[in-house]
Length: 250
Image (cartoon, rainbow, N blue to C red; front, side, top):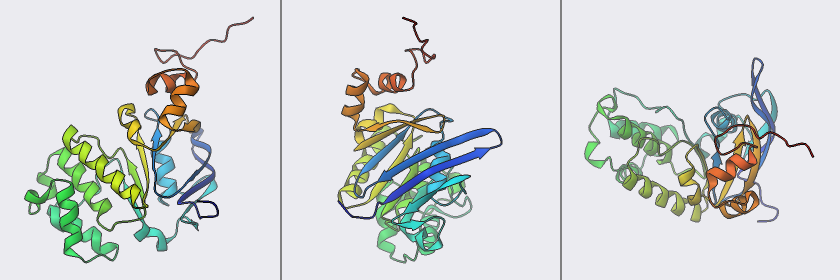
């Protein structure tokens, strides 16, 4: 909507680790009520970018804002849901205790909210199980439950469906769609192209830079291909085997 404050805004974000520029001058503005896919290979800077937007990593240069507020800012904590690649749960606590703890951290004490996310993530029958006794996929589901329980307006999800079975993955994406339709902004980082069509808009990144942004159809059309993997290779200047294209002299 014209004149509204962006849900997420990054201006000139740079993050260096020694001589490595993990994020290399990213400008990105995301509006409310849409699902954005941040797509690229491992090591492309996706996780570092999300951590800076969440206020968990300080940029070398540039700024990030959530809902108009410069990050990091403690006042934003209850308005952001961040799901890292590695499950951030307490192994000794039960499933229900973990979710209830994270809910209380964000000021939510409604048992119904805990029950809702346990049902969503199909963990209701494991509510009393210590997290350390869960499988990897179940811990992933628990991490998502902890991220969603306080119903934040901005979700930053780093590989949220890794290790999740296909049926539950479809359930997650259906819930993400309902959240977006209700006004939540969702940024999903992934290197799996087959989930990209579930996003409203895609942002391809490589070597810390944005290659192209647009809908799935727009990106396919601009690359002259019918699949997103080939489109990514095209925009990255790579051949079908992932090797740099050699310029041909005229």
